[in-house]
Amino acid sequence: MKTNSHAPPSNLMDLLLDAVCVVDTRGCFAFISAAGERIFGYTPEEMVGRPMIDFVFHEDRAKTLQAVDGILDGHLQPHFENRYVRKDGQVVHIMWSARWSEADQVRVAVARDITERMHADTLQAALYAISDAAHAAEDLVALFQQIHHILVELLPAANFFVALYDKNKDELTFPYAVDEYGEAPGPQKLDSTALSAEVVRTGQALLVPPNSGEGLPGRPPSDVGRDSSNWLGVPLCAKNGVIGALVVQSDCAEARYTNKDIELLQFVADQITPVIERKQMEVWLQHIAQHDPLTDLPNRELFHDRLQTALRWAERNQTPPQLALLYLDLDKFKQVNDTLGHPVGDLLLQEAARRLSQCVRNSDTVGRVGGDEFLVLLNGITLPEQALSIAEKIRVALGHPFELAGHKVHISPSIGVALYPEHGDDYKQLIRYADEAMYAAKKSGGNRVQVTSSPSMLNTPKS
Image 1 (cartoon, rainbow, N blue to C red):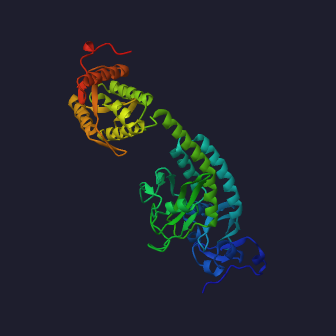
Image 2: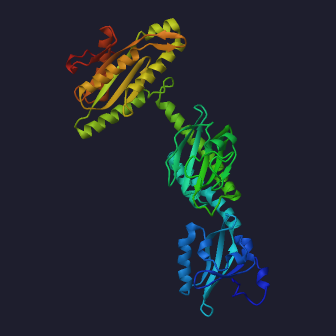
Image 3: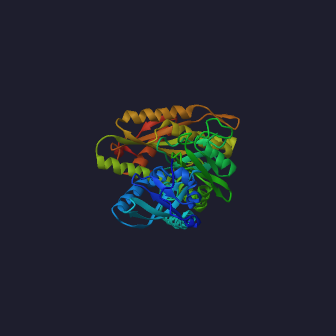
């Protein structure tokens, strides 16, 4: 039968707010005063005889055992701090004052619950850390990495992800996701059954305890991780609505997220929401400055920048693959504008841009450089025939009828082709040669692909 065999002769100790604990040479509790139940959630009888380390939060066990070694070597530990897991799963912060009693061959320690103080301190520390991260992060991913580092110090957050909601697309994406056992989820519609979608839809925090059961009413499947995990998500609430969610997940079954963790994570979410909005605005402004507003393709400035970058890379390597530049003009586009109106003409340009993008690889670039003119940069072309094959693919794709606002529209492209290094190594020169070849194709009746002649045979460029 377990007894408090090391209990002092009086019950005055039971009046203390701090808990007095005695641990024997086996590392098991031999005595715990009455205050232990308030701090740890267990009665003294439930803890006596059990290993002390079993009650320590798993992430703090290594440093706790290291501190125990110091105590056994005779070193006093007056202000050692670690975390314990209460019977209800709440993680509490404890400050210990401990020493070794050689006469009794036991460790004697006094435990003080400092959870409330730590909570206030962590909120203040988090505020400063988030402010620093907001100014230091170059982009959203860097910001989320910094926030993750901050959260790991505040609560169990080894698994953490950010969901952002695009209202225009009605789509939830996951730009940052760290999970020990899974990968980042793909884009999801807001009406999906994912937990994060539920958080965004309702604008309310959602706490799912471990082992809540697959298929439990109101329990949608987790976005990331295991059904046995602790799952906590809070909304990113902006003035114009919910823009996403922050989610933490823990596989420590004995330690469960609590209302204080909800408060802490929501505090972090509220602090970073304006930062996310600001950085999204910066990205959007940069995007519209470099993209055509109608087709969302790279504009002239961005296309020229990518072409120059590709030429510098090719010059440094000085070996195949080559580059190819296509200059396109839509035949009969003016006729469409004049007969069907500019709104239909705009739809035609948008659909032509979409078809163009589908004809090339992700490593290539399609840009709109004005009116009905497009440029296409083909990277990694080892043979000129490859560029001609892609140009022909584009010609055929644009030759199919377009269904636009109830009208069937037929157009065709005139395509000029210039190659690096065969036709030059300067971006302006290559554009000029491709432009000349495109006009030669148009003068020959259009709906064809024309490779530039040798530079010496080209006409003087138009002013």
